[in-house]
Length: 394
Image (cartoon, rainbow, N blue to C red; front, side):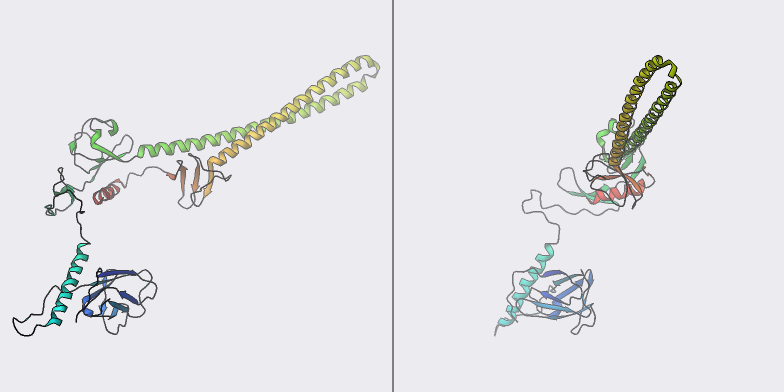
């Protein structure tokens, strides 16, 4: 059986649709046993009449161009990862005679299988760690013996791999005269910041570590100080806005009271003047002078009342503006991060709102919403290990 072996990769992967049963095999294979089929990481079983989705049948063995596999009912589920790979045994079962007729058909089959095996190895090599073709690194770098709780790293000369680097652990609060190793994590108790130790040393001096004599040996990874300051400033802004709104409301109330008092005084004085005019009929000349004076006073009171009214309206407008400003800063309770303020305008740094979904007060830093919450140090040990693991894997 001679085939034309196409220049293809002997591996194909599909993301299945719901109930899909048929999957193409776009590379040549010699027998049904040359294929392996996986659903996710589970190896499926060949059966000429598959009775379930864990079994499959094959067509196209020994055919140039490949064939297909068919899963049993009910087929794949949505988004199943179906992987089909050619897996020839690296062996030779034929032998050619030293004389007599030469078995050309057998030779063709052997050559086909050799090419198929080379393709198979090429596909496997493509899934290994390799230097790029343009590398300047020597090709004699060997993997070291693995050591428990150590990470794989490159030596200082970039000429060898090492397995002696500690993963690093969370050492808790920083202390002087303490031996720290590379990748250790420490907490600066003066500000709550978390630092990564980038060079082994014995600590000295005092905190904060940002100004410590050995500050170059620490890399900041959690800036708790800045986060706390931002939260405090946001809370202060909210309190100041609330105070301004309260003061404006008080001013408006006082202005309204003044206006009412002025109106009451004007009416009372006018009534008294009229009574005096009637009683002093016999003193007409004197009363006329008094009436003129009263008229002038009444005009002054009216003017004062108008002025008071203007002040009250201005105070009312100021109160409304202050309330609007506060409404623009504190947006109230919402289920998710808003993208505009309550007037439909763009957000500003320092804006606040209460997230009813996560039950936290959040502030806007000019680009994103951030939680305002107290720093919980009880999980630093676990979180530190998770950070160390993330750094190690990176």
